[in-house]
Image 1: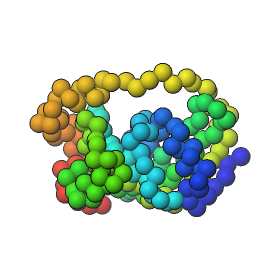
Image 2: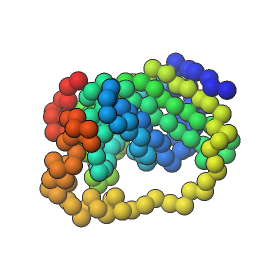
Image 3: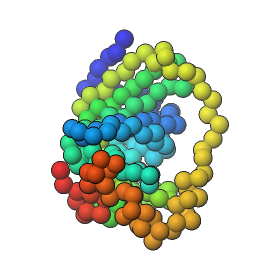
Image 4: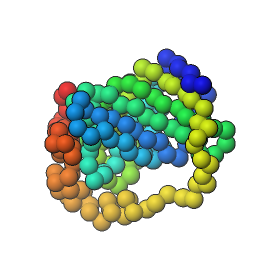
Length: 188
């Protein structure tokens, strides 16, 4: 049975930190719904109602566009090993631009001033609801390892090549919504 909480409890945080992958879901009022897998190593629980993660370059930038449109964001964590559990964080998200002071401060305080190649921004989530559910339908999987293709691709592109790619592929969503990627402070 699903249970709801107003904040990330200690047991929730411990579960989140043990996961290797999470999924984010976002949507504007119209257009396509986006669901994307993310590397949990890039996520930090900042407070009982706040999380942030480093967002690496992808073929699109749907989450940023949707956050500019309405801010709605859900993160989902599934137990692929051990006792079954699904945990969702619901709330309002926003983008922390890569060139901002806030980004630099968070990178220093939460990520030891280290960002994986191809990191384009951070995604911030103010959590207003935590929900757990049984997870009985989630299969068991064995973790084999990380893929290195995204890192290799980003390193080969270099900073200048990444900027060019971002202009080409990440400034607008697949539905044509702006992502605010090159704005100092994306507005909603």
